[in-house]
Structures are given as structure tokens and as C-alpha cells.
Amino acid sequence: MLAKSSSTLLQSDILKSIEAGVLLWQTNSSTIELYGRWDRLLGYELTTPAAISTQDWLDLLHPEDTQLCISARKEITSGFRDHYSYEARIKHKSGHWLWFKEEANLLQHEDEEPRTVISTLTAISEQKNLEQHCLEAQTQLNNLVKTLPSLVYSISFSSGRMYIFDDDENLMGLAGAEGDASEWWHSKVHPDDVAKQSALFEDWINHGSSDTLYRKYRLLDAFGEYRWIVDRTRAVTSSDRATDFIGSFYPLSELNLLQMRLKKLAEIVPGVIFEYELRADGSSCFPYTSQGIKRIYGVDPEDIRDNADMVYQHIHPDDLSAVKESIQQSAESMREWRVEYRICLPDKTIWVSGYSVPRRTSSGSIIWAGMVVDITEQRAYQDKLKKLASTDELTGIYNRRFFILRMEEFFASVQREQQVVCVAMFDLDFFKKVNDTYGHAMGDEVLKRIAEEVQKNIRRTDIFARIGGEEFALIMPHTSPEEAAVLAEKLRIVIGQLNFTHNGENFKVTATFGIAAMQKGVPRADMVLNQADQAVYKGKNAGRNRVTLCSSLE
Ligand SMILES: Nc1nc2c(ncn2[C@@H]2O[C@H](COP(=O)(O)OP(=O)(O)OP(=O)(O)O)[C@@H](O)[C@H]2O)c(=O)[nH]1
Image 1 (tube, rainbow, N blue to C red):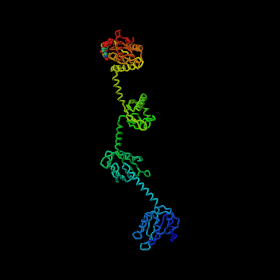
Image 2 (tube, helix red, strand yellow):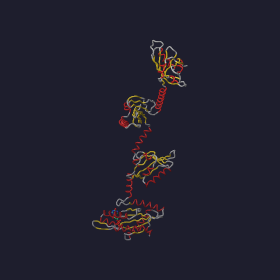
Image 3 (cartoon, protein in one colour):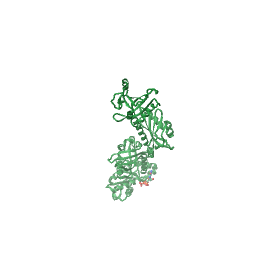
Image 4 (cartoon, rainbow, N blue to C red):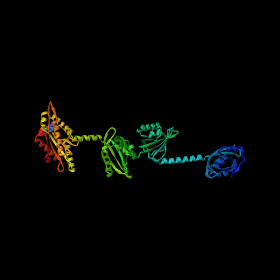
């Protein structure tokens, strides 16, 4: 197919030195002379120059491209133009197709016949492949953008031009657009959000814009409604300089909006909202806690996300086992968890109330969702109220109401257990005289002082109360009547030794004690108090200032 040419050696040597094939053809001839490196390009080992028939040349071309070549050459033979160029595929010796570009120029004047045309053949397969890849990547990217539920945009850093990828299915209903980024943005963002969001963008740029900028604001959609969206922006860098921004707008769903509102609500709740998980292996963690966890437990949500230990470490040691037990009970019964306990913080101890509802998960763990609220103030108020309800206003010791309640409790425990609880009652002697002689205020002072002194001389477990005007009573747990009599005697002496002074005049008071015992078989608690009262009465009749056992103890 290929024959040796008769062209000069000099020409062929020059042409050999360039990395391209060179073609020379006379328009009136059916032969093409080939020079340069065309042989190497196509895998032939022939020395150049060589000659090839026009038809052989066309046969080397890809069938789809032969017409290109014919038409291009016709441009010159018909005298329309003096140059042409086209890109086509040519068959390599090994059988595969190579892309090349032929650029031809008419060498001789058109009046001269035959006319000579010279053209260069350059291999462009690599470039073609690259173009093909780019095209494919572009198509893939466009397809990808169309599958996203977001509206994707790019902004040129230098020109500020914005390009919004067209996607008629996007959730915002917004069309693809090209224009000034700032203008587009300002026309779409809710006026109340502009200042803050601009500041965030500026700040991001000034800090190197290396991370993704994540913003939430309201954007006008195609239907004239402001929608909450998430705008994620990234900088495209080249040589460490931002050249473009790419980003996307994603409308927040109802669920997202709900989450946003819940998060805000969670932050203002006076406590912590949490999810506590007890795993099947017994370990526990807090998958979610609102920011209030810092106020309540002094820890961050991240500190306890995988391990709840830090929370347990803050629970008051006296309450820890009760808290753990309450969780255990709730886990066993799958009933709500409700408990009040103390939390120790570095500077104070607070009371909290916890409430949550358990549910089982498919992984075998139990998750409680609920909240813990600071009730320190409420608790202090309750304590105060409780104290007020149980305290005698004048003396500060327990009042009759509280005393009777405790009597009932002891009465119940005496019925269950083998224990003796003694009750002592005492009534001041001739107290009316104290009031009459020194005044009611002085009488009050006497009552207070006696309460104080008796309190000092009894055990911490004894319950001491003022049950009437000048009547006092004591519950003495785990005390036999004999021991009770000894204590009463001691108190009688203490009272009798107290010195009172009014307007320079000294006086003393005495008290008469009666003792009864609460034992198994006594039908009612108040009967024990009656028995003690009767013993006092007996003591009064016997001359006062003495200790008397009730008749059943004699
Ligand atoms: N100052 C003062 N006096 C009280 C109070 N409650 C009761 N009294 C007085 O205590 C006195 C009790 O008097 P009585 O019941 O007659 O008994 P008494 O004078 O102590 O005589 P005996 O009990 O028989 O030894 C009355 O004068 C009451 O007014 C009080 O809160 N303050």
C-alpha cells in the first residue's frame, strides 16, 4: 500500500525532525506524499518520504470521519478556500483508532496547476480523551445535582458572579440563574436575617474559610414564601487562595423546624431534658441532654454521651443508692421513673426532681426520656413549711400536732417489733402564779428557757414537744419505764435548779412528771398519752414537783 517517494532527501530529513506527520498532495493527483513522523504515529517502520493513494488514505480513516476529510479537501480543490482543518480518527497499525488533527494549507497559487497542498497531522488522542472525561464528569455532576434535594450554586470569588444549577424539581421551586451573587442573595434573604448572615459570611472569609460555612436563615422561594433553609458553603481553593464558592440551599423540613423549636425550648426549660440509656450489658449513657445539663450536673453533654459515670459521681452519696434503685425498679416494671435527690456541685448542693418514662429498644436497651429540674428553692420552702407545721412557735420545739403524729408512728412500730417506747409528760407547777406575779411575757420566757434546757438534756432520738400551754411531752424510743423515770427525774432537777429573774427578783419553777409506756397490746396511741396525763394528775395531787409512773407501770 505504501510506496517510496521521489522527493529530496534534505526535505525528508527536516520533516523527520518534527513530531508530526506531514502530507503533501497535488490536487490533480491521486497520490499523497507522506513525510515526517506519520509512520511512527501510526506504528509503521517505513522510511520517509513515502507515497500513498488518496483512497488508501481514506481507507485508513474511521468510516464516520472519511466524509469530513473529503469535504475539507473539496474546499480547496473547488477553490473556495486555501486552508482547512479537521479532527478525525485514523487506524493505528495495531488496529486501534487514534485521534489526529489535520491542518492543511495551499502552497501554490490557485492559478498554477496542479496546486500543491501541505498539511500536518498531529496526534490529539490524549487531549480528546481528556475532553471526553471532562464531558462525562460534567454530565455526571449535572445528573448528581439533579438528584439532590438542594439547590446548588457556585460563586466566582473574583467576579462575584453566581451560577445556580438549574433543577426544576428543587424543593424551593427556584429556577437556575446566573447573575450578581450579592444582588441575588439580598433579593431573596429575609430582611431580618440579612445583617446577621452577612456578618457570619464575613467572619468566615476573614478566618480563612477553610471549613464549611453552615447557616440557617429564611429565603424567599419561587412561591413568594420565606422558607427556613440551611445554606452550606465551601470555598474552592487553588494555591491556597479561594477561587470560587460552591454551596447549596436546603429547605428545612417540618421535622427540622420542629427540632429547631424543641432545641430552643429545651434551652429555656429550668432544668435538663435528657435521654438516658441503660444498655443490655448494664452500662449506661446519655445519648441526648439539653444544654441545661451544665447547670444541673456541671458537665457537658459530650462528657456523658457514651458513659453516664460523671453524672453518678455528682449525686449526693446519701442519695446514690436510692437513685440507682429507683432506676432499677423503673426498668423492671417499665413504669415512670420519679425521684428527688441531691446533686453535689463544687460550690453548693442542690435538690433536683427527676421524671422520665422508659421504653425498650430493639437492641435490648432501655431508654428513659424525661427531665430533671432544680427544686432547691421549692424544697427549702417546703422544709420551712414542714417545720412551721411541726414546730411550736414560742419555744421552737415540736408542737402537739407533730407529737401526736409521731406517737402514731411509734405506736405502729411497737405493734410490729419487740420494743418499748416510753412517753413522759410534764406540767409546770403553779404556773398561773408565775404569770400573775411576773407577767405573761415573763411566763413566756420561762417556757422558752425550760424547753431549751430539756432539749439539751435528752437524746437526739427523743421527740420533745410542747403539747399544751405549760404542758410538755417526750417520746423516748427503746427506753424502759425505769430508764424513763431516771431521765424524768434528771429533767425535774434541771428544771427546778433554773434561776429566773424579774425586776431584780429571783424565782424558780418546778414541774410534775408522769410516765407511761407504749407496749404491745395497748389498743390506741392516745391512751398512752392519757395514762401519762393521769400520772401527772396523780403527782399534782401528791404534792407536785415529782415523777410518777402511770398505774399500769406501778
Ligand atoms: N405565759 C404563758 N402562760 C401560759 C401559756 N399557756 C398557758 N399559760 C398559763 O399557764 C397557766 C396554767 O394554769 P393552771 O392550769 O391553773 O395550772 P397551774 O397554775 O400551773 O397549776 P398546776 O398545774 O395545778 O400546778 C395559766 O395561767 C395559763 O394562762 C403561754 O403560752 N404563755
